[in-house]
Length: 273
Length: 273
Image 1 (spheres, rainbow over the protein chains, first blue to last red):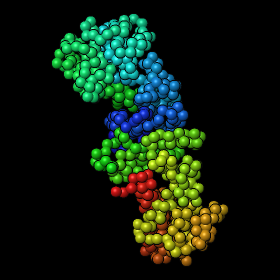
Image 2 (image 1 turned 180 degrees about the vertical axis):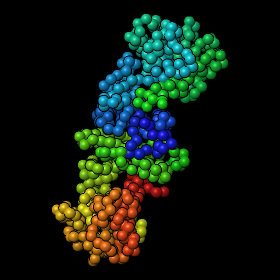
Image 3 (image 1 turned 120 degrees about the horizontal axis):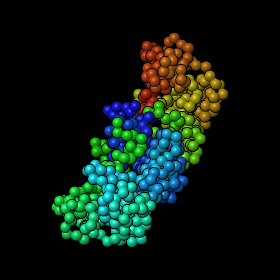
Image 4 (image 1 turned 30 degrees about the vertical axis):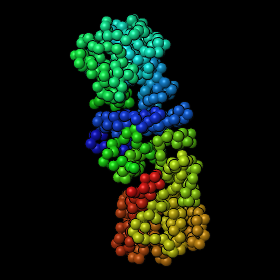
């Protein structure tokens, strides 16, 4: 039985420990987000930043996993691919993407892993009542975030998935991964477009922070399109502002993050009660 | 500049991390005590429990020290002696005792260590305006706590230090350590007594929890004696209750703990501002 959340102090000898491993680490938001969510769910657990330098990662991580009250780790830049081999059991998304972002201790002491970046996008759509079955999807950006999103969507069986990346080879690599999930999806590497599709996803960095550009050259968006932008800051990216102007349904990076972190807290063994 | 304490959240990507390493770990009080004290001093830092099993300690600890935002560790049972070799610079108390309980990262990246168990006792006396210079001291118990206390007091140059332990060899070993600190102290292994002394210290476990016994056979204590008991629970041990009845000055385990943890937070680089 979880302790009542009001009875939880900051941290005690019984507190279970989680961490986020990255380099650099100061900018990560997971410590406050996950610690708050653990407590909201009545769990005595804390998630702390763990700054591991690249030259130390391979020796340090297996030893960190021996800490007996450490129950899970999140991996961020630059470790998502490098952490894959730490897991004894790898989830379907991570197997295809070739990277993980969450590692959780199982009841038998082994470690399971998966990547939730893309699952957070799918979950954010689901919370707005929008599914991907039989949809025609255009994805901009085939980097880390784009790859995870494309693979997670592939498991939802869209009709087609068109991928644009300025690095064509990177687009082709991702297209092959999508085909591995579901050979029936019509996958193509193509230029950005807004016609003949139902959903437009931006997973490129264009529009981030002070960047006022759109990730594709358009002046209007068809109002029946659903527009998603993975960028978290700003919350209302140039693409989302245009989409609202055009009357499109929109889903943003913060909704993806919320869907992702909720699914990860479940994965860490603390389901909503 | 430390952030204002009201602005500190629970934990963020910028939070500095400290730990207490032991086996078992659930019973430790340091996570709440130190985290609260860090915050009271306006520092964005947290101290978490780190449960390392004995078979993992030697491989795990050197790797843990590579975590770049980990700034210090506390060691508790059974690791105080085993952790000594992790330090690059060892303080005077720890050198004599042959054990450490605190390890702190220095500005140049190396690690300094010392043992504060005994320093906490000396600090508790100092806060009551009582020094050890030229005093005649009787110590009951030459285990881990007793050893640290005797060595810390030896650095204060008492006139004499008499040590009682049911294991005479253990008493002799500690007497030799006291001699190493200051050969001018009259050190002897002796039976418990309350005459010809100024300060009586209990560092034995007798009187702990439900144990209603006194650590020595007496019915009264001379009222000019200062009585110290290292036991934390109960706060008023049978010895301290008798001492109060007899009009003696008393100092308890909680005052030692407070003196110790304040000195350790200083050692971790967060002095009172």
